[in-house]
Structures are given as structure tokens and as C-alpha cells.
Image (cartoon, rainbow, N blue to C red; front, side):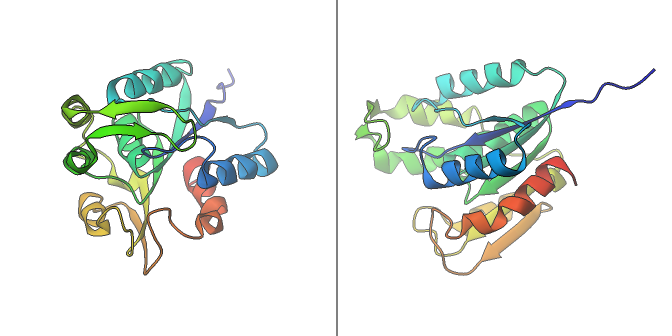
Length: 197
């Protein structure tokens, strides 16, 4: 009896105040289109509030009950990628990931407009409270993570991720910024890690 080949699904998760139209998301999409046209690939627009964002991601994963998952997450997307990996398994590549975003959002309370979608929303303490429920203080299989960090990230302290993801594959580049300069250099290796290693 032949064993059925499992689906491979990769989900790209953008950061806070970002969208599927961001530079890294579009670079990833173009790479998949050229090199992995048969791959099941998603770049969902994440809700600005963590609970509906997580609910939508859970529902997206549930569409593929027998799949092997790969997650690529930038900043806040890295935080949610860790949540998804710990819940469903798979592998994840995190780009300058937010480690404790609930501690950062205190500086962002009030009204915001997403520069990509023009969606207006109000950030309050419920965001902070709800974000904590998706934290992953213990990593069950650190070797299933690859974390890409640049030391001159102006938004996050890269050392927090360095500390949290001990045992993971870590790439730390001097300089750069929060967007992770030169991300496209890593795309071939990212998909090798997620799909083949």
C-alpha cells in the first residue's frame, strides 16, 4: 500500500501595521511563484486585534488537516508563527521576531491607520492582554526554528530573540534594520529549511 504524500503548506505572516503588500511578503510570493509554483502558499491579511488574527490563522491551518506546515513570520508575524508552530508543529523562519510584543504596545496606545490598507483602528489595553495568551515561553523543538536577526533593529532588541530561541538556528547580522535588509538573499535557503531539511 503506497503512503499518501503529505501536503506542504507555507504561510507568510506580516508584522504589525503591515500587509501582504509589504516588500518582504511580495519578494516571498515572487520567489514561490518562480521556484515552487505547486506549493500551497498563503499571505493572509492579519487583523489588527490578536484574537481575530489568531482565530483566522487557526481556521487556515484547519483547512489542511494532514499537511506539513512552514511559517515565515516578520516581527509580530514571528510571534504568531511561534504560536502556530507550538500548536500545530512544522518549521518556522522568523525575521526580527517580536518576543514580548505585549510589553511594547504600551507605547502605541491610541488610534492608528494601517499604511497599506488605510484601515483605521484603536489600540487599547485589550490588545496587550489578549496578546499574552498567544505567548510561547517554552519551545518544544527549538531546532525547528531559524531566526534571522539584524543588530541595528530600531524597533526590537535583537538580544531578546537571541535569548528566547536558544537551540534554534540563529543568523545574526551586524547592522541592518527592523525590516531586515537584504531579506531576499535568504529566500532559497529559507525554503530549503522549511521544505527539505
